[in-house]
Image: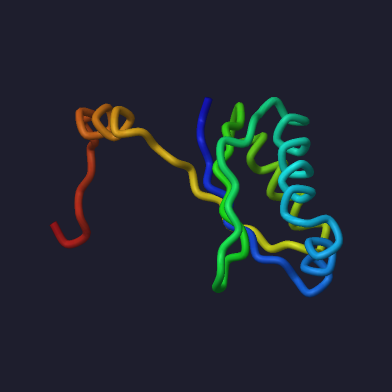
Length: 106
């Protein structure tokens, strides 16, 4: 199952919910969200700085990942960025592929 890194930043209203629910309450909500699209949370961390949470999730597809991102963003309480995570073996496969490409000016 593909892995994704979701970086989330709470709005002021979102932070009020974190204060109310606590970290474990938010983790449970994120776990239910992932499970609702056939996935699971591998890890979730809160952090200092610009990004409030980092979540590594296994999701069945890019469409499921997009659905999660759209739903989270539509709440208005969290802004997210999502990155597709690749294994070293997937990079090995990519490195072995022959790609027809001509660089600009070549």
